[in-house]
Amino acid sequence: MSTATIARLKPYLVQLEKGKSYFWCACGLSKKQPFCDGSHKVTEFLPLKWVAEQTGEKLLCACKHTKAQPFCDGSHNSLSDTYAEAGEADGVGVVLVDYVAGEGGALKAKLDNGCYVIRVPESALSTLGTMKIYPVIGVVDGAKNLSQYQAVVATGQSPVLSYPGSDVVLFIVSGQGTVNIGHRAFPVSAESGVCIKPGEGFQITNKDAEPIAMNISVCPPCATPETLEQMPQVFDTSIPDRVQGVDESKQEAMADRFFQVLIGDKTHGTPVSQFIGEIPQSRAAHHRHLYEETITILSGEGFMWTDETKTPVKPGDTIFLPLKQAHSLECTSPDGMRLIGLFYPSMSPSINY
Image 1: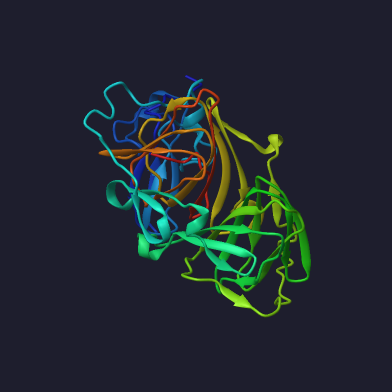
Image 2 (image 1 turned 90 degrees about the vertical axis):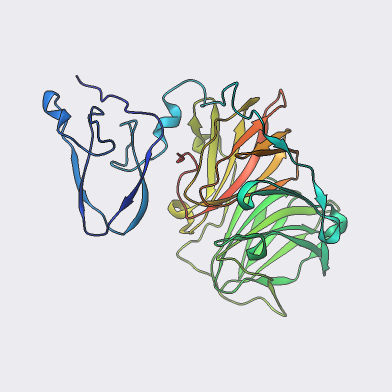
């Protein structure tokens, strides 16, 4: 046989011990997946021996198509023409959760295990000069590795902001203007991501009448930004290019879905990944990630599902998913759904189990 057998599509979550040697099954025939049991002896395949670099949980490939042996790289999502969808029986008995008004009039739907969806009217945002801002995700919400703010900048210049010791990733939802970082100025427009390194300050310039709406994501989390009287003359020259917009040549397929990483470890040296994606009218099968994740709906409507709950979502809603939370996002709009996601630690958004 010249093609490995697919043991299963989803990877195996395993606990590894630093310094210990392991043998990963490459043929797919082992009964001790994802590890070798000698079944490869009737094939031309050989197991992969490697030594764990650290103690902890890792996802090992089960489809045997990964290009990052022995680890999952998301290749299992493209082994069929359609992305794995929920079955007819999935969701029986699930409770529909309503949104409840909270601080400042923000609406929140609380789902399983700390997962929630938040809907923030502009009236709930606090004024900070020409900027209005609201914390949609933070430590008080159960997040451990990131915080996120929804912000709007009117005509003029925002205050100079800094999140000391944290990587900051912006996403421009609408509008256009300039992001100033140290002595550099970067033009930005809708659906572009921006990377700001630790120790740097940033300022938004808006010369148009239309406000600039954006997400501000911070890792490690920071409760409140510092407002500075002047811009720090700090700019990390190791990452000269800070803005990335949508580029079809950089999109990656996941069956009938796609995503593009805008900001990540490979492009900008950040511990967080920011991606933009599009899904067709469908409901994904339940899955989990080894990271905290935030998703903001850009267009399209549907439902966010967890183990025992679901709630409707629409453009402007932000979803927080704790580590390992089982979930699926359903799109009910015939034209599909567009979203922006961000998670820590940085990896491919296609890696799930």
